[in-house]
Image 1 (cartoon, one colour):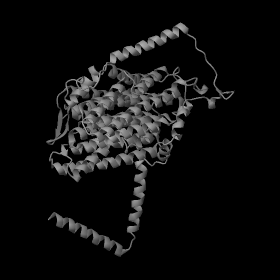
Image 2 (tube, one colour):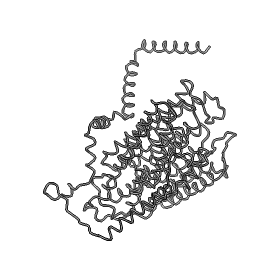
Image 3 (cartoon, one colour):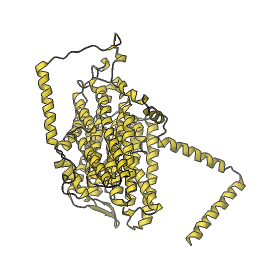
Image 4 (cartoon, helix red, strand yellow):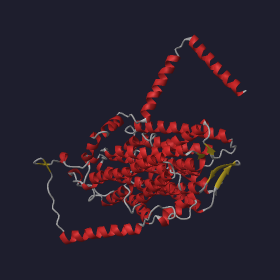
Length: 604
């Protein structure tokens, strides 16, 4: 048992948590770091080995395949980098509790990735969801409401997951409780499919189960947001979604098309909401939702190039979205705010943070040769390939999905121009003239994530595709799947030439004129300076977008609101039915007896 890697990946962080209950903060940090690094080493060994399993009392609880090893490895790589960021500058009031929860996060996420047994999977999945709430309330009372919202939505999805797996067990009669494949052929199988699908969408943050994420991103500790919604929840949610689509169910094309439509709607709805946000956290929160749409679209295509694109985008998003949240976190720690209109000009004060944020912004916007471009490009190809294999109606629908995905990428670039300009490139407010770069561990971890964006983009064929993605679908070469030509080196040369040309022009002319800003004929004051944030406000007043934004502000698209309304209505109904009158209860008992009798007679 104690020499089994999978067992140790779950147990070591839990042991570290128990020890951390009784030691000072500095020792707590060292133990947390040691346990997470140890887990990283073990995950590398598991990734390098063939299939690994762990059994207890004759029941196989943990077992790996190519997909689970891939997820496991990056759970631990990203957790290690994010932990480096957290070693300093976590708020003192919850620093101790934060490190206790961090090691539990690594343990439970590892457990989800390696669980092949239904019961083990449900336990670790539920515990990983509970951590979202526990991290959120660290910032109490500010984040208590959004944490409760996340807890209720995620908890409801956990119930759906439990019910869906129970139905699968009944359908397959698998005595070992393994996750096995079934065909969508009856009402029960469809119920199981959609229950699991909603659980995956909730964890990942896809429409319509996404509404907890932007509020949580705004209120929870920024380090927790980078670790969970930005990274771990994306990996686990899309991992389950990939399992559903690739291994657990056989489904008709209509289901596949519906999922692709949901992916396209997730992209466009969320990015439209991100465009008009003035709070940097909420902007990133909505983009965390929007990017899930590309993953859903890619894996939903069902063809190798789309699946690789979706999985690669899952990985890329976890990298650059963590980097963006941590970059904003660094700014917030130095300035005390994440409101975009109150920031500006911090590129000179925090150059390393600016570089990391710029790389993350370009990556999420799909600018080549960074990693985000190639994964989106493969998703686009997957959509077109699937569309070409079906009739005219489906081709029109899927091509609309393709257009929405491309348009969503353009809007992502627009919103991150606002993000970068408002924080780093606009005029520096006087109150931030004394701001300095963040601590070494903070910018170093952030630049590590930025380096991964560059490496996975420039060396896309040699590292991420060859080592991690092709083995998942059993393909030997990516170039036989691509519909076009792509060379990251050529694009890199063009970028280098452009930068060199810009430097030459600057050195030759070297004339920069600085002018004062004016509103009308009067010089701008500190509170009336141009931040660039207001430009996008016009979108919310344009027809037909104004109506959509109005509905969004009224929470018409928020499943939490409608769940609350339904719960209150149902409670009112039961309150009226349970009037306290004896004859009313007698009638309900009689009705229940009739129903039970009918069920028993039909079974006979």
